[in-house]
Length: 402
Image 1 (cartoon, rainbow, N blue to C red):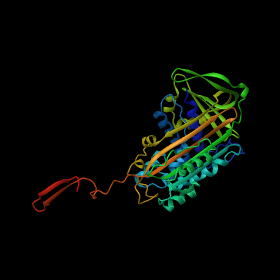
Image 2: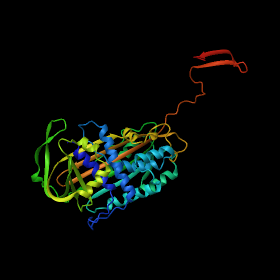
Image 3: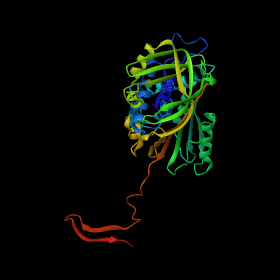
Image 4: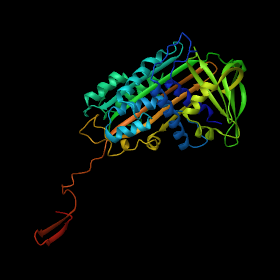
């Protein structure tokens, strides 16, 4: 069961893409207006994305990711893609049939709306573009990222050791110091980085009493047991009992943001639950949870996590972008570009007062390795002298040291 909280983390971030038009939303909150089509698709992406990730990770390890952060970072990349590359990125994002303009409008709505959704919840959402100052980036690409993604755009001397420090400082500043480093080094082929940073801090609407926190056993999936600091609260929460799991929703502040816990039955296991849980299951759960007086136990903990997403995104259909045949001409039509890296760093802290979470998604764009001109004899070669009409070879040789 050690992935229960990790799954809850993915669920709570998928809530950021959920239509906030419930009649029960407190008047002190501000609904985030996103079209129902895009909201449904991005929720579908969240569950598909998490399912693919957990299937690739060691069964006993925690997983904590932000679907929203990945979606927005790839949304920036999508604006630089064409042809099959763009089609595959849309397929991975579950955005087939949605125009680029409508997607960009939705991203803008989230950037503007999420930080204002609940005045008692601190939420930061920021984008940035960092490019090698000797590399020419198309103005149209940069302009759309400035306008639709509110992105900071800056050219840097990538050969300077301070370049990565500047990018890492930006990531740290946007996540309140929770994610201090996203780039270890800048490779020679790297010409562009697209970053999305997401920060969330919310106090529980009903806070846990620290005096009720106590040592308790936590039963690991491998049959072993560890001791955790278990927080407990008895309150009226939306909850439901399903065939193979229990669900309970813990609201933050004014109630527009929630943490939903899915607790599998012992005989089910968390991996089996995740594999069978879809966006449709999530939508059905929202309509069936009822408010009831329940006791909730939740471990107090912090978690730092990092994952490279290249293979996960390939499995979701986004293959061409990672090859030498990537079509990223809207970024630069004259250079053979490809996506070298998609990775995410996350942080999660849960205690009696509330939750603090952060994510930074990094998309690296590089220039593919260009081989030597095939017609330059700058290494050992073979020569032939022949007659054209009879195709007779007169001389041939191997030149090792001319």
